[in-house]
Length: 368
Image (cartoon, rainbow, N blue to C red; front, side, top):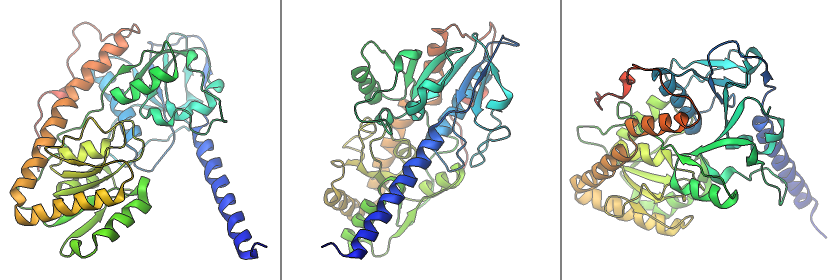
């Protein structure tokens, strides 16, 4: 007969899982979106959760809107509530709450993949665009065997070839356009002076594996500071990455792997899990990818990186610099802008004649 304590613990676990799922579903339920006749210029609205915790996906939505507005197109972040805007990074992005917006058939509504369980609640006007920043979330929180209705979308974009392949396989006939994420070199760039023995990591998605890897390292970490980057602003995260020669990648089923890209751009030598979508970032000559979830392999690779840095710090920093240069080339702000404008041009949204290229994307200058 099961011990009453075991029964109680099991019940508590199930209750916690239920509440977690219920909270996740509540955040994925779109607001009521009002539609009506056009009253202004056609606008591209990005539906966005009201989420105050730092999130690379939400930061990317804001950046898209900034780019579009700076290029002369009308765009806005459409939050669930009036007055809401993210405050964990600096921005002057145009935001509007759904209760104050009326969308017309001339507009576009860009819908992130996190709303997958509730696509049936969206209006069929304006035209809908799928924006999948992590294709591995496509079927999350759906009943077994169910699939979201991507047939409602006029077009689809994603952020990596990995996610594009996933979506093509899942939805026959869908041809998503890759609009790559960008890393801003004005924010994420290497330090110029000597660095302390510091290991940075973002443990949110693999808290247990992070603890296990650090425990496996044991005395090998003597003399090293472990910096956990959690709930940090964009500027705080960039400063922490810039101060560390090593970064432990702890992504799980990523559409791209923005923390890894930002760590590389900050000069870190990255060790850890590519997490599928991040595979394009890891070069074995300038980083140390390990099999997904293999904590022993991650600990061994990190131990080797630590030993190498203690013996020859310049070599490790040189490898990190190579990775960063590749990231900033392949995921430059200019490449993102070009792909973004090309995507919307196919939907009939083109910058007005004589529009000036966004000033923020002219050159890659930064300061310490």
